[in-house]
Length: 208
Image (cartoon, rainbow, N blue to C red; front, side):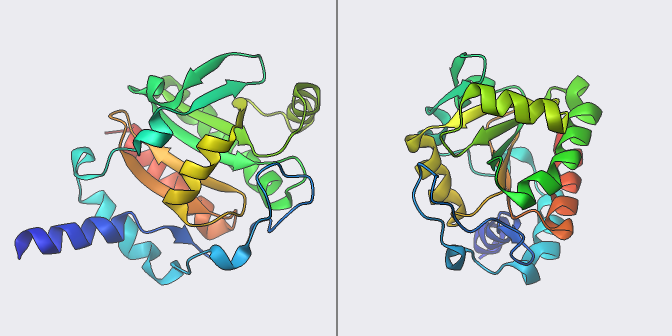
Protein backbone atom coordinates (compact mmCIF):
# COMPACT_ATOMS: atom_id res chain seq x y z
CA UNK A 1 0.00 0.00 0.00
CA UNK A 2 2.90 2.35 0.83
CA UNK A 3 4.38 1.79 -2.63
CA UNK A 4 0.99 2.42 -4.20
CA UNK A 5 0.74 5.83 -2.54
CA UNK A 6 4.33 6.62 -3.53
CA UNK A 7 3.72 5.72 -7.16
CA UNK A 8 0.52 7.77 -7.20
CA UNK A 9 2.43 10.73 -5.79
CA UNK A 10 5.07 10.50 -8.48
CA UNK A 11 2.39 10.25 -11.13
CA UNK A 12 0.90 13.48 -9.83
CA UNK A 13 4.37 15.04 -9.65
CA UNK A 14 4.89 14.30 -13.33
CA UNK A 15 1.44 15.52 -14.29
CA UNK A 16 1.67 17.87 -17.23
CA UNK A 17 1.41 21.48 -16.09
CA UNK A 18 -1.15 23.27 -18.22
CA UNK A 19 -2.97 26.56 -17.56
CA UNK A 20 -5.17 27.82 -20.36
CA UNK A 21 -4.37 27.32 -24.03
CA UNK A 22 -1.57 29.82 -24.48
CA UNK A 23 -0.18 27.74 -27.30
CA UNK A 24 -0.15 27.67 -31.09
CA UNK A 25 -2.65 25.19 -32.46
CA UNK A 26 -1.47 24.63 -36.02
CA UNK A 27 0.25 25.72 -39.20
CA UNK A 28 0.12 24.72 -42.84
CA UNK A 29 3.92 24.80 -43.04
CA UNK A 30 4.79 22.47 -40.18
CA UNK A 31 6.56 19.28 -41.23
CA UNK A 32 5.16 17.48 -38.20
CA UNK A 33 1.51 17.58 -39.31
CA UNK A 34 -1.52 19.42 -37.94
CA UNK A 35 -1.59 20.41 -34.29
CA UNK A 36 -4.72 19.50 -32.36
CA UNK A 37 -5.43 21.70 -29.34
CA UNK A 38 -7.99 19.15 -28.08
CA UNK A 39 -5.11 16.78 -27.38
CA UNK A 40 -4.06 18.89 -24.40
CA UNK A 41 -4.93 17.33 -21.02
CA UNK A 42 -6.47 19.91 -18.66
CA UNK A 43 -4.20 19.50 -15.65
CA UNK A 44 -4.46 23.04 -14.27
CA UNK A 45 -6.03 21.86 -11.00
CA UNK A 46 -3.15 19.44 -10.36
CA UNK A 47 -0.33 21.92 -11.00
CA UNK A 48 0.23 23.02 -7.39
CA UNK A 49 -0.01 19.44 -6.11
CA UNK A 50 2.48 18.36 -8.78
CA UNK A 51 5.06 20.91 -7.69
CA UNK A 52 4.64 20.04 -4.00
CA UNK A 53 5.06 16.32 -4.67
CA UNK A 54 8.06 16.94 -6.92
CA UNK A 55 9.78 19.02 -4.25
CA UNK A 56 9.54 16.14 -1.79
CA UNK A 57 10.94 13.52 -4.17
CA UNK A 58 14.51 12.56 -5.00
CA UNK A 59 15.89 12.66 -8.52
CA UNK A 60 16.09 8.87 -8.62
CA UNK A 61 12.36 8.64 -7.83
CA UNK A 62 11.53 10.05 -11.25
CA UNK A 63 11.45 7.99 -14.44
CA UNK A 64 14.36 8.17 -16.86
CA UNK A 65 13.60 9.80 -20.18
CA UNK A 66 12.30 7.24 -22.69
CA UNK A 67 14.97 5.44 -24.71
CA UNK A 68 13.44 6.85 -27.89
CA UNK A 69 14.14 10.38 -26.64
CA UNK A 70 17.60 9.58 -25.27
CA UNK A 71 18.72 8.01 -28.55
CA UNK A 72 17.20 10.65 -30.83
CA UNK A 73 19.49 12.92 -32.83
CA UNK A 74 19.55 16.68 -32.38
CA UNK A 75 21.05 18.83 -35.14
CA UNK A 76 21.79 22.41 -34.15
CA UNK A 77 21.92 25.40 -36.50
CA UNK A 78 25.71 25.15 -36.72
CA UNK A 79 25.41 21.63 -38.14
CA UNK A 80 26.54 19.73 -35.04
CA UNK A 81 24.68 16.47 -34.39
CA UNK A 82 24.41 14.70 -31.03
CA UNK A 83 21.98 12.56 -29.07
CA UNK A 84 19.83 13.78 -26.20
CA UNK A 85 21.39 11.07 -24.03
CA UNK A 86 24.84 12.61 -24.60
CA UNK A 87 23.78 15.52 -22.38
CA UNK A 88 23.73 13.42 -19.22
CA UNK A 89 25.40 15.38 -16.45
CA UNK A 90 23.62 18.60 -17.42
CA UNK A 91 20.18 19.93 -16.55
CA UNK A 92 18.43 20.34 -19.89
CA UNK A 93 15.24 22.11 -20.91
CA UNK A 94 14.04 20.96 -24.33
CA UNK A 95 11.74 23.64 -25.73
CA UNK A 96 9.62 23.06 -28.85
CA UNK A 97 9.00 26.25 -30.80
CA UNK A 98 8.69 27.94 -34.22
CA UNK A 99 9.24 31.49 -35.44
CA UNK A 100 5.54 31.94 -36.33
CA UNK A 101 4.33 30.97 -32.82
CA UNK A 102 3.23 33.98 -30.75
CA UNK A 103 3.21 32.21 -27.35
CA UNK A 104 6.70 30.89 -28.14
CA UNK A 105 7.93 34.46 -28.62
CA UNK A 106 6.26 35.56 -25.39
CA UNK A 107 8.09 33.01 -23.25
CA UNK A 108 11.50 33.53 -24.88
CA UNK A 109 12.62 36.34 -22.51
CA UNK A 110 12.10 33.90 -19.62
CA UNK A 111 14.16 31.22 -21.38
CA UNK A 112 16.90 33.79 -21.99
CA UNK A 113 16.84 34.73 -18.29
CA UNK A 114 17.00 31.10 -17.15
CA UNK A 115 19.95 30.41 -19.46
CA UNK A 116 21.77 33.44 -18.07
CA UNK A 117 21.01 32.65 -14.45
CA UNK A 118 21.79 28.94 -14.41
CA UNK A 119 24.32 28.37 -17.20
CA UNK A 120 27.21 28.24 -14.73
CA UNK A 121 25.48 25.31 -13.01
CA UNK A 122 25.47 23.20 -16.18
CA UNK A 123 21.96 24.20 -17.18
CA UNK A 124 21.16 24.27 -20.87
CA UNK A 125 18.12 25.41 -22.85
CA UNK A 126 17.77 23.82 -26.28
CA UNK A 127 15.18 25.37 -28.56
CA UNK A 128 13.94 22.66 -30.93
CA UNK A 129 12.37 24.17 -34.05
CA UNK A 130 9.43 22.07 -35.24
CA UNK A 131 9.17 23.51 -38.76
CA UNK A 132 11.25 23.43 -41.95
CA UNK A 133 12.83 26.81 -41.37
CA UNK A 134 16.36 27.25 -42.75
CA UNK A 135 19.46 27.95 -40.64
CA UNK A 136 19.50 31.48 -42.06
CA UNK A 137 15.89 32.08 -41.02
CA UNK A 138 16.50 30.73 -37.52
CA UNK A 139 19.76 32.65 -37.05
CA UNK A 140 18.11 35.87 -38.23
CA UNK A 141 15.23 35.33 -35.84
CA UNK A 142 17.61 34.52 -32.97
CA UNK A 143 19.53 37.75 -33.58
CA UNK A 144 16.33 39.77 -33.66
CA UNK A 145 15.07 38.20 -30.42
CA UNK A 146 18.54 38.27 -28.81
CA UNK A 147 18.36 34.54 -28.01
CA UNK A 148 21.32 33.29 -25.99
CA UNK A 149 20.55 29.57 -25.96
CA UNK A 150 21.19 26.79 -28.43
CA UNK A 151 18.80 26.38 -31.34
CA UNK A 152 18.31 23.14 -33.22
CA UNK A 153 15.71 21.09 -35.08
CA UNK A 154 13.60 18.23 -33.84
CA UNK A 155 13.46 15.46 -36.41
CA UNK A 156 10.38 13.31 -36.93
CA UNK A 157 11.52 10.60 -34.51
CA UNK A 158 12.30 12.95 -31.62
CA UNK A 159 9.08 14.89 -32.19
CA UNK A 160 6.95 11.76 -32.08
CA UNK A 161 8.74 10.44 -28.98
CA UNK A 162 8.18 13.72 -27.14
CA UNK A 163 4.51 13.71 -28.16
CA UNK A 164 4.17 10.27 -26.57
CA UNK A 165 5.31 11.84 -23.31
CA UNK A 166 3.19 15.01 -23.35
CA UNK A 167 0.08 13.75 -25.19
CA UNK A 168 -0.10 17.28 -26.63
CA UNK A 169 0.92 18.50 -30.08
CA UNK A 170 0.76 22.27 -29.62
CA UNK A 171 3.69 24.60 -29.05
CA UNK A 172 5.43 25.85 -27.04
CA UNK A 173 6.03 22.89 -24.79
CA UNK A 174 9.09 22.10 -22.71
CA UNK A 175 10.65 19.02 -21.09
CA UNK A 176 12.94 19.31 -18.06
CA UNK A 177 15.62 16.62 -17.73
CA UNK A 178 17.93 16.39 -14.71
CA UNK A 179 21.62 15.49 -14.58
CA UNK A 180 20.84 11.81 -14.19
CA UNK A 181 18.66 11.74 -17.30
CA UNK A 182 15.36 11.71 -15.38
CA UNK A 183 12.26 13.52 -16.60
CA UNK A 184 11.42 16.20 -14.03
CA UNK A 185 8.63 18.15 -15.67
CA UNK A 186 6.58 18.73 -18.80
CA UNK A 187 5.20 22.23 -19.43
CA UNK A 188 2.54 22.93 -22.04
CA UNK A 189 1.83 26.35 -23.49
CA UNK A 190 3.40 29.67 -22.66
CA UNK A 191 0.99 31.14 -20.12
CA UNK A 192 2.34 33.04 -17.10
CA UNK A 193 1.32 30.25 -14.74
CA UNK A 194 3.07 27.58 -16.81
CA UNK A 195 6.25 29.66 -17.16
CA UNK A 196 6.25 30.38 -13.41
CA UNK A 197 6.02 26.65 -12.63
CA UNK A 198 8.76 25.92 -15.15
CA UNK A 199 11.10 28.49 -13.57
CA UNK A 200 10.40 27.09 -10.10
CA UNK A 201 11.17 23.53 -11.18
CA UNK A 202 14.33 24.56 -13.04
CA UNK A 203 15.54 26.45 -9.97
CA UNK A 204 15.04 23.36 -7.79
CA UNK A 205 16.67 20.89 -10.16
CA UNK A 206 19.79 22.96 -10.91
CA UNK A 207 20.41 23.45 -7.19
CA UNK A 208 20.15 19.77 -6.23
